[in-house]
Image 1: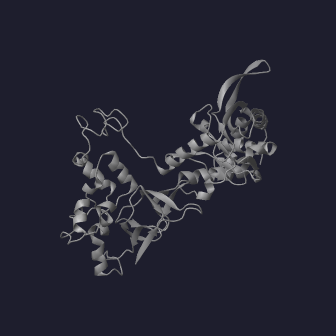
Image 2: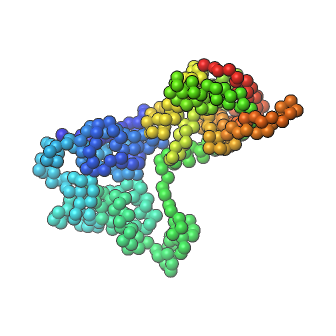
Length: 439
């Protein structure tokens, strides 16, 4: 019995995603519910589990391909002693062809687009899969087409070994390694006539040369780029910075961190202290928990706190729901859980939506302060700098204290500078007065 692997819907408003990585190869055994492939959407990256146990018989979608929900991306064959797919007729097996059976290049199956077009109306060569493909409908993922354009390759000249003659990234790389770009009419590096599309000798200019590499943006990187540009165009960004004496919290954390780890099972970091204080200050300044709708201000009743998490592929902002209803431990547990699942690609799309204000903590990497970009449609984002020991003047005496800079980016369309500074003064007072354990 064969099981179709379907592209799932990753949230109510998500209708497509990019298959970024296969975690198994065709022919590999798979176990139900183990991660099978990775999908990236404009909201979240996720690992998709195998729907059944068996052998990954066919991979139908290449890495880098953007597909709609409910698309069949692979087929899992039930394990059998003879290795054949149960219930498959000889005619169906023949129709699949050797390349489709293994998901890899089969001997004699690779044909160029021109050869496939010639074979479309006649008999295929002996031992080949004989797909009927027109030159204008060459099967290749957007990533493969992009690489081909950048290297001046006509995909009709490339031998495709994928399902139904699909041109895979490996096919294209093999073609390029054999000098396929020059054979496809790409202009020479030097002495080329007309067009002007080739880079000058030595790789200078806008194109990729010997000293450069062109890599397509990941879906997450593209989404971040679009949102950051949109935010700068939308909001009138203004920044204010305050210096905070974190010495009381440093001492409190040092005294309680071992008990906290034993009781809750997670490390006690500084982020929950900032998060709890931020939520409390919003009670006195509800405009920081709002958004703009036309010429009106929408005040949100609940504080849904976004926590920026750095990933290898970019930045994601999972949301602590109803943070105003949680005590300190509840916020700490929620932040830890969201961060862990963000790093292991187990977040749900709804967990990165509808935040009302965001906290980002670049201080863990040593940054003293920054000017973060507002996460639309929010009106403010708080940046946390590194906590470092510095000499400060207290009552006309020099003392060594644990200090940190907090930077607030706010939308000047809604929030005036005086209000922003009052808000930060309130936040500063809360943090510096935090001498007792709160729970």
